[in-house]
Image 1 (cartoon, rainbow, N blue to C red):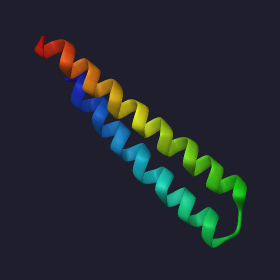
Image 2: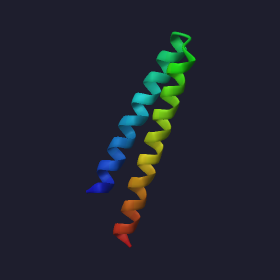
Image 3: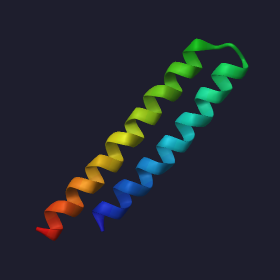
Image 4: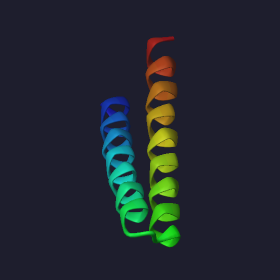
Length: 59
């Protein structure tokens, strides 16, 4: 169960980060773009965490 929750949160953070990055680009605000990049990276890490949990459960 934790695997799927982590993956879902990861995808959500990745999508929110991409949206923030697009807003930062559109408004010429590097600070917002940086926050979007950070949130997208957080999403990538959450997805990886879910993958690890899944691998451990399957082993």
